[in-house]
Image 1 (tube, rainbow, N blue to C red):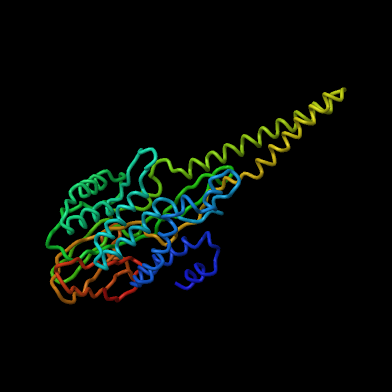
Image 2: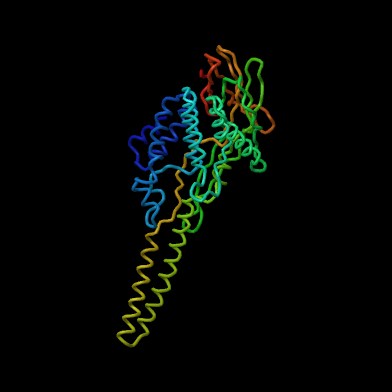
Length: 367
């Protein structure tokens, strides 16, 4: 919350969105939703216009500009989370139509709209899309079915929640996130292969306790799963071409440079020496081109995202409610120092109260 605003104001322009993402996520965990809203709005404004007019993005699509030189907008899972957070804040403000638009945009960012090989598979985005539609008087059944299907087709071994039918009596939604999210690193001869790693989770579920309610929920979405299983990605394809191009030009340069030099040295005629010198010069040019190619993957990372996101929707009467949220380990025991105590102020049963909590949230807090 100190370095972020400073980097946004004074840092490289190409990193501005990255720091807006990070600062917004930190603000969410501190309950500073107005600050998060400001940074997310600016980041999404950049994201929505990045593919066409941004000159650095166009350069990065060429062979001779490093990926890290382009304006950062993030991998699909990072862009999805920017829309997801903004949708949560819109819902907090009672703007269900805008919230729904954000959840749909999140799924769009996770879809292959060019080749139609795969569609977005975030459980919560579809579920909340359908819930908002239902609350607005529409038919949210299609979105609900997609959410159920995505939850059913989870990665083997991952923890997934059973998606409950929409409850018309529920008026409080808990959005929960926990665990450290994916980070990036590069492998390959030229550092051209973008890969992800996630710290093994300590938290496997969450318990919510208030009044007569006491229940446990599992994760809905796993960002490690999202980061590593989205199909062919355009930037991967370009980076792969860059690496192949660099190898090909480097090898061709070696062959031409050596062959041309040998031909020039062994030739007894002026023409032969000239041809040999020309081949060697072409090899030198090829080597220069190879050296100028920069296939390194962009490992800049939105590094304060969670691994898991989940939710609960419950009916609560008007009034103040003290809610205890415990983050549980694999055995179901609360993890020390992570329990949150939140005062939830429900002012009406006619609209949803949205409560956002993460394992890094400040406590106690009022929402």
